[in-house]
Image (cartoon, rainbow, N blue to C red; front, side, top):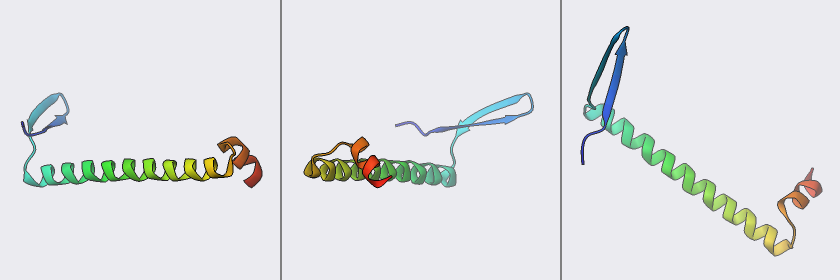
Length: 67
């Protein structure tokens, strides 16, 4: 696996280089956080759908009832 690159734009100069250890750690932390948020959102959507299915109503009908 290659090291992710970072692009530095300084006026008219563009420099591409490998991420250093601190940047790579921050990059991986952001990737992990994004993955966790996506998994949580999927879990929440599945739970919401399960409740709606149990009640036998659609999301639009639930919004009308709660709104």
